[in-house]
Image 1: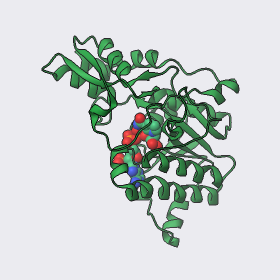
Image 2: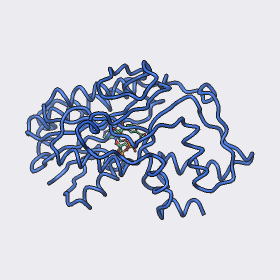
Image 3: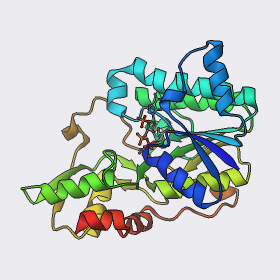
Length: 293
Ligand SMILES: NC(=O)c1ccc[n+]([C@@H]2O[C@H](COP(=O)([O-])OP(=O)(O)OC[C@H]3O[C@@H](n4cnc5c(N)ncnc54)[C@H](OP(=O)(O)O)[C@@H]3O)[C@@H](O)[C@H]2O)c1
């Protein structure tokens, strides 16, 4: 089975390539230079040519900078909506089913409990509004298409600028004060990229379609998450809880990005492991051990 993967250089896309290849898939990358945001026939034919022989298109590319999306909404909607619409149209023309990776942030802040797929989405930031529009473009393009809404992703190479776990370890190691601060208001589901990749591959094998939440089990505030990272890394640094307002964020991100994998659980898929278990496993890997020593 052959996957065409956009965003394969990113945190999730690179994990998906690793997991898919080790499960016997063939993977091909669809990088940004291969997609022209244009309706002209040459661009359309070039995209269609990329889909020849492909069994499934995984669209993991996105403008993931929530703050910049808020400051530059047109860039955000161009990157996240127009690109998705072009890919969804090409996949439909070529009869290739497609998955888009979305976010539990699309649910917004209207409930105080973890969101399930039957809850309405009321995104509050431009980034999450663009992700919801991208979902709709994919779902309306073909019945067979799939949306995975995921949580706070971690994993991958320690050197990746977006590696939240590595950044917090480096922050804790370099603090001159013996403490670091973290947001105690915002809650979410830390999720290992490899677990998300495995969940996607399992859903593809079952020809699943529609919207699925896909997060590691359990929830945490940013503060609880960072405290867990620092403690499990064995660092003698205190993590102090602070209010969301301390971080001067532009984007009005929801305080509740928590979710449960309700649909997958109801349909009999095995639960995804807890985020604590996934984090422990990740910190024990060679990449992170080198950072902790
Ligand atoms: N990270 C999270 O915590 C999180 C949470 C919820 C949902 N998600 C979703 O999960 C997916 C993967 O996220 P990630 O964290 O792996 O992202 P990432 O590490 O920020 O990587 C983004 C990827 O998208 C590509 N990309 C960005 N803008 C593009 C454009 N305009 N055209 C083509 N390619 C473009 C990048 O390519 P270049 O290398 O060329 O820049 C890179 O490969 C995204 O859909 C994201 O919205 C992520």
